[in-house]
Image (cartoon, one colour):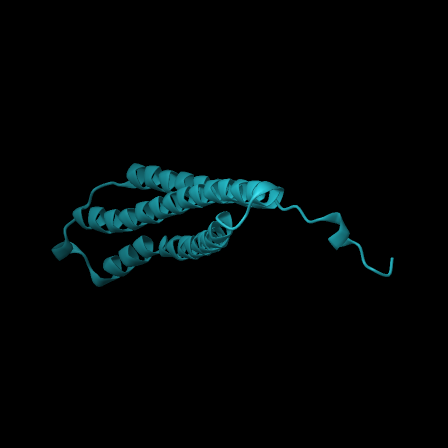
Length: 154
């Protein structure tokens, strides 16, 4: 079936079918925005610690270096999460285009679409897993001095 042979109703259904995954793109875009926000916060904290690096000595300097090591690891993890989510969105975008083009040519594309969505979901799951790893790393290294957790009137 070629474009000239399609009726308006068929084209409408084809567009509906090809555009349904667009909702996944919107969700992935929101996830990417969240990841970018995490990365921005890590970078801001790195800048603060880099300014402290040359001004500290002894135990304070050791603390700054350790935090910089953790921040570097966090930035690396978030960058990988962004890569995975971007690969997921790119795969979905290619699938939308492929579904539309392959439908116009009459090509049976069920297995291609299924494989592509499995790949897109694998990328997204990997990105979310990395996001969880970054959050765990960030929260595991939060140390609040006990004296700050006690109310003065207790």
